[in-house]
Image (cartoon, rainbow over all chains, first blue to last red; front, side, top):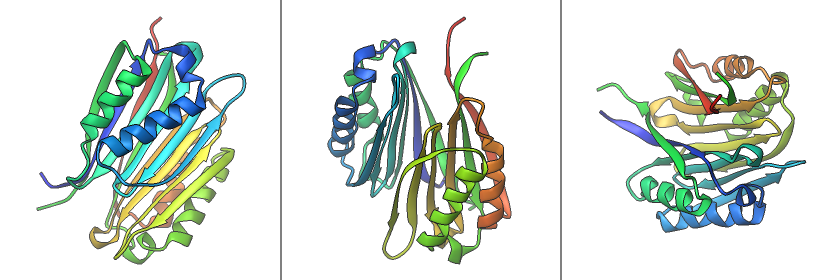
Length: 117
Length: 117
């Protein structure tokens, strides 16, 4: 199977609620996950919602990392989309699960861009 | 089922190859899809790759729209992630499929943040 991209969808439940509402912490966590997994950061955009919640993206040369948080539910949705072999998306996932304290988490992996033979 | 977010994953194949390498066109397409589907745009980040390909995100108050293109394969990966009832993600998908000319396309819908009862 020849897929152009690997897309990890993380469902992080029972996270640290304070962390989920801390834009600075989440920005640092996504940037650390990107660089420590071998990605090249191109850009970022983070937004704090009222009364709570954060959305943020780190655009990497190899695609992107995204987070949306619902502190009131202790929940975060995280996407790690990579292409090529230079990045280890599983390592990025491990870093974010550990930093956010998601005691109940699952990871779905989807192949994107499966081309015909 | 009580899900916080709706996530559409679009696989767009056999697209117009020129369009897939045109950052200005793709930026306009994502912004149009966001606003015409009822979303509130908060930020954006687009990048042109060499020799070809574009990555771009539009962050919306209701989550995000993302595109990664491989013009050499006529392929684009598009994500439309929304929360709440004010945005019509299906309409955003229709707009992008039409604008990119994806003759061979599929849409996967994933519920994100399914909470316990």
